[in-house]
Image 1: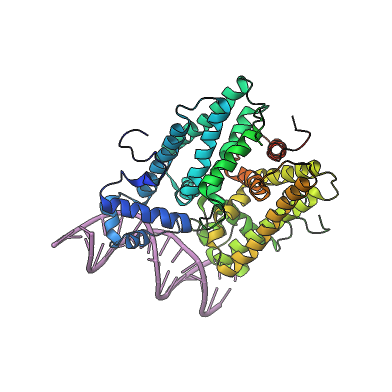
Image 2: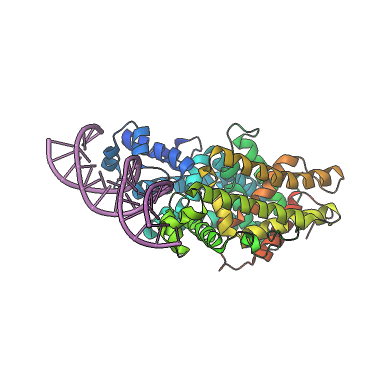
Length: 211
Length: 211
DNA sequence: CCTACCGATCGGTAGG
DNA sequence: CCTACCGATCGGTAGG
C-alpha cells in the first residue's frame, strides 16, 4: 500500500488514479461491457455512450480500442500484485502467510470479478508487445504463491510432493472465483477468501492440519 | 459410454457423430477460431475458409452463427457429462470414486482445452433459450461432484465442514485447467488428472490421508 | 468534445 | 455449394 497508489487497499479504489474523470468513466464503461460481451463484442460506440459521450470522444482519451484494453489490463494486474504483496507483508509463519495470501487472492477475485473476467478472457486480444508486459506481471504473481509453498515445504511446515503443481492449483482456485462468483450468491467475498485459504492449507498438508 | 455415442471415450471422438463431413469441418474450424479469437472475434467467413468453403456455405449447414455456437456448446457439455458418468460407473469406495471422478474431470479439460475454453468464455453469447439448456447440463455436472462429496462426508470417509463450497472448489480446480494448460508444457493430461484427484482428496480431508 | 464521414467488414440471403 | 450482393455496423479520422 504505497502512499498515493490508491490501488492496494482492496476496497474498489483500483481506478482512483485514472484521470481525468472522462477517461475513468470510459474505462469503467469498457470494463463493464468487456466483462459481459467481450472485447470484440463491444463497440467503441457502446463504451462512449455508456460514459455519456459521443462516439468519437473515446479517441480523445485513448489512441485505439486496443489501447483502452491494455490500460485496463495494466491497472488490474498491478492491483492484484499490490493486494497480494500487501497481504503477506509483515506476516510471520508459513501457514499464516499462505492463509493471508490466499484469502486476499480469492477475495480480490470475488470483489473485482468483472474486471478479473476481462483480464482472464480477453488477454488474447492484446498485441504482442502489450501481452509481454502483462505476462511479466502475471509471472510475478505466480512466483509469489510458489515461493510461499516452496519456503513452507523446505521448512517442513507443509507436506508437498509437487511444489510447482500445487502452487499452480492454489492460484487456479483463487483466479477461477471470478468465473463463477455472483454478488447475489450465498457467500461473501470474505467467506470465499476464508474457504480458499482453508482449502489451500489442506492441499499443502499443513501441520497441524486445519479443521 | 453408450454404444454409438462416440463421445464418452475421452479419446477425442467428441465430434464423431457430427455429419455430414462438411458440417463437422465447419464445427471444428469454429472451435479452433472461437478458442483463439472468441465468438465475436471470429467471422463466419474465417470459419468457412478454414473449412475449405465459400462464405455462404456455412448457412447450408447452420441456420446462424449463433446456432453453430450452440451446437458446439451442446456437444461439448454432453461429452463432459458422459465422461464423468463413465468415470465413476462401477467404482466402489468414496475416496476411489472421487479420485476417478476428478482424474477424469481434469484430464478432460486438458485434452479438450480448446473446446473447453469456448464453452467457458463464450457462454454469454448464447441466447436465453439456448443458455437455459446448457445451464441444465452444467447443473448436472456440479451435482455429480457434490453428491460424491456429500456421500463421503456422511459416511465419515471425508472431513468436510462446507460440502457445497468444497465441491465447488473441486469443480473449479478441474475446469480452470483449460485456461492455463499448454500442450507443450511439462505435464501430460494424465499427470494433471492425477494431481487434481490427489489435491481433491486432501481438500476433503480423506482418511487415510493421501501422501 | 461533437458532427459527419471514411473504407472495410460484418452476418445473412437470393438466385442459380 | 458458389457468386454476388444486401443493409448495418464497425474502428477510426477530419474539421471545427
